[in-house]
Every structure is written in C-alpha cells, then in structure tokens.
Length: 406
Image 1 (spheres, rainbow, N blue to C red):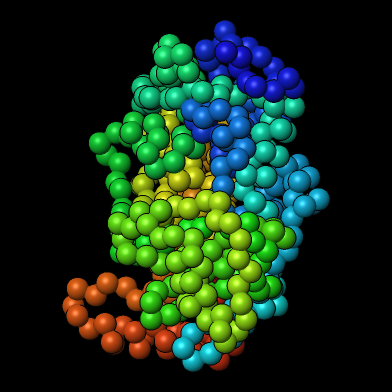
Image 2: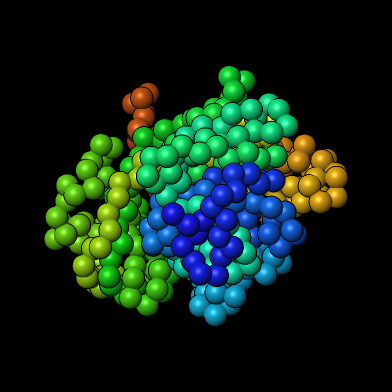
C-alpha cells in the first residue's frame, strides 16, 4: 500500500516518523497539514477511510467569514473563490406568520459562504498532496502512547491488519469524538457533556431549493429546517423522537411532514425529489478541557462537539487548526513554544462562545423536555424570543453577529 493514493504525492511508505502526526483527514487535519507543509514542517496524515470515502462524506456547507479568511490567508481558497456562493438571509416561520432577516446587512455586515464540505475537503487534500504531503489512507490509529514525554508514538493498524508505530514530536488528534485522541486522554482530562433531548432526521434531497433563504420553521409537531446546498441539492431537517431510526419514515411521509411543518399551504410548495441520504442527529454538546495533554493536541470534534443548530462545527475545526498550525510552526521552526502553551485557552474561548449561541438556537427552535412540567411557561418564553427577533433591531444585530461569528 502506498503512502497516498495520488500520483502527485511524495510516496515514502518506509518512513515511520514525522515532526507532527495528524490523525484524521477532515477539514481540521487537512488545514493543519497544509499550514505545516507550507512552512517546511515534516508531517503525515493518518486516515482510516479510503480516499474516495474522505472526499465524498456529506457534511455541512455553511462557512463563516472567519473560516473564509483562514483559507484565504493560507492560500487554500481557490475552490471557494470559483464555486462558493454568498448567502445572507434566513426566514422564520411560526404560528404567528413568517419574517425574514437579511443578516448580511446586520451586525458586522457579513454573510455566510455556501460551499459543500466534501468539496472543501477535496480541495484541501489535492493541495496537500500536490505540495508533497504524506497521507496514509486505510490506516486506523488505535492508541497514542508517551504523550507525557518528548517522543510520543501513534500505534496504527494498516488495512492489511499489520501494526505500525509512528513516532512524532507532536500528535494532533483531528479524528472526532470517538477517535484515538479522546481514547488516549490521561485521567486528569475533564469532559463536559449535555444531551439537549432533541433529535433531528437529517435529509439530503436531489431537489432544488424551495426558498432563497435558510428556513427555520417552528411547529407544534416539531422543528423543520431548509438549507440549500447547490442548485439541485437541498438539505432538510425534521425534528423526530429520540431513538428514531433513520429509515423509520417513508419518503412520502417525510415530504408530507416537511410540507406541513414548513407551512407549504400558506407559503408555497416544496420542490421534492429523491432523498439520497438520511441520518438521525442527536443534539449534544461535549467539550474536553484542556485541549493539550503533553504532546497530544485535540482539534475539531475531538476537542468539542457542538449541535448543528448554528452550523459552527466545521468552522471551529478550521479556526483551531490554524491556531495550532501557527503555534507548531513557532515552536518547531522558530523555537518559541509560547503559542503552544496558549492553544487550549485560546480555542476554548471560541468553543464556549459557540456553545452558548448553539444552546440559544436550540431553545429558540424546539419545545424542550421539561422535567418540571411547566412546558406552557417555557413555550411562552420561546415565542417571546421569536417576537424579539422579529421586532427588535438590537436583537437582530445580536443574532447576526453571533450567527456568523466564531
């Protein structure tokens, strides 16, 4: 098996060490890898999936302005400049009617950029390999050892079952909440976790967008959401009971629920089409403190999981990757470790801000479980929030700043 699956890559399957071993070839790992490579830092990316799977994993596609700036200043924005689309309007539908917020004219006056995450990953991977970066596909990292010393190692299971140890100066775990980074944490790590008690059925439909805005519909039967991905692909969300299977509802039932909750009879029909992907998403928040444990650093979903209610996950991952990349360059190239020492503190400030806004969005869009039994009171508060967002200029500016902020 070669070190990568691209003819543009430098193939060095015999090498078992690098200054930085990066686990995971998602946005965080590939932004980090590209930054290190551009500064001459030796690194290798380990990815358990094959290249085709990496480049076709359907994920979110709303990039905040900070993410676009990170990509621009690191020379990683060619794809976005060619194919990204600005978006700056959201529409709320409730029992009291509908209202729209042109949030690109509010707050700091910034829009989102719509760019599917699998396209971003494909761009980043091509740039990394074309620059001589090393990727080991089909290599599952199973343990990190020696993180409390100067030469940690990552134990890897190759596709053929053969074990391999990758030695490093630093290990960056960009491999999600169930990856080797979290499994290798020392006893002193603190995990903060909250299950919000809400589940979404996430749907990807081969259908054009039905409105020119991100749609949030609050309905007695549960939340429904509409997010355009491209001219012929739309992502929808339907609130469902926790524990619902992704295949529990037929396509006809799904489109019926979407039409009902999006109030299509009042505001126009939905453009329907084949549903090509389904997944149930449980809205959870999960944060590890600190994000550095000796020579091991947590990045992206390995550092913190955030609910998709405010589209912050991939954007946090890119922010953290740049902070870590610059800090590693300072240390490995310039001999200055101070930025590495501040990595956890800097990232956690952004993570907790995003968690707070995500929680606010969850309370805005859903009738939450109420152990105290005072659901009517909570529901009245929810509609008061929506009314403020509809009528108050200061509430609208606050929303816009936080909606696109990170």
